[in-house]
Amino acid sequence: MLILVGPSASGKTQIVQLLRKDYGLNKMVTYTSRLPRVGEVDGVDYHFLSKEEFEKKIKEDFFIEYVVYNGNYYGTAKACISNDKVVILEPSGLKHYLEKVRSQVKVAFLRCSDEIVRIRTIKYCVFFLVFTFLYHKKDVKLQSRLTEIYKIHNHHIINYLFVIPS
Image (cartoon, rainbow, N blue to C red; front, side, top):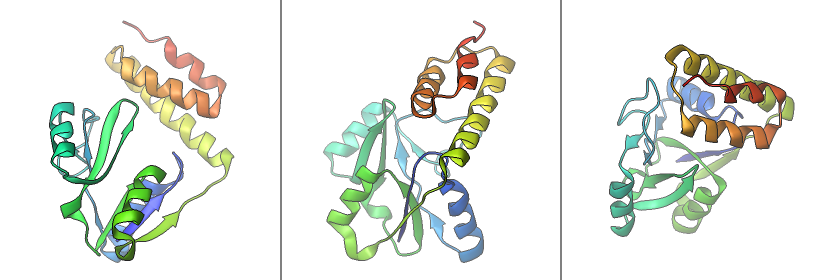
């Protein structure tokens, strides 16, 4: 099993797509308690659970690892581990894999320049700005995520995202 670890906007998702297409690896479909984003499919992008369902699975020792990120749970099921899969993890999730199944995994740490991360992050934010204005939704979770991105990247363009029509 291959584990990819890297900061936001480091290209992890694109690498998984290439590994699937060119080398036949399967993407491990992980679990989350967050709501699906536009275009995401349950069982393909994630297994979407309610917070209560996720917490029940934690108590049942269903996950090899789980984390809370931006107020939502994310985790991988023990039953999904196999040699033909690739998964994207946060460093804290990686720690659990190394403690429990070190001999079954290979790890790749991804890095890219701060400039590339900044450009990709701006593109991500602009996309959601346009989406929000088009659909006239006041999205508190989006604002929270963009605030987090702002703290990380401190770029002026994100200031415009808080002028969202109600």
